[in-house]
Amino acid sequence: MKKTICIMILTALALAVFAGCAGNKAPDPFDPDAAFGKIISEVKFAGDLRDQAEYAEFVFGDAMNGGEVRMYEAGDKLADAAMFFKVNDKADLEAVKAAVDEYLASRKLEADRYNPAESAKIDKAVVWSDDTHMIVCITDDTDTVNKILNNK
Figure (cartoon, rainbow, N blue to C red):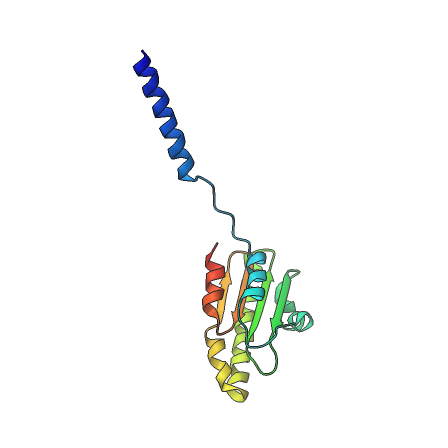
């Protein structure tokens, strides 16, 4: 009887130890807003980023349909930029994607004409999206951007 109780206690302890080591904690959900904040603070851009809220509203306003857009650009003929979009649904995101594609094509054409060295950055732009968010980043530091976006 004592032997059976000892085996049961040891088994219970072993299960408790293994359950504790398994770490059944669910991963934290990915927060696109927080990721964008990390991009702004941790990614190396060629120049100081400037808030371009008014310009973003002009460029992307028609596609936003009441959503949110944040945009930062380095200026001084540098292609570096970071953009964050939050929309109400997937259909709105398609409109934003089309506007972003048009914006990138326009920036590429401008860089090809006036500053060809910046053109490659636009070709390597990182674009991430889910159902209601999109993040666009133009920089040479794409490794850091991808690291932030992939640490979901």
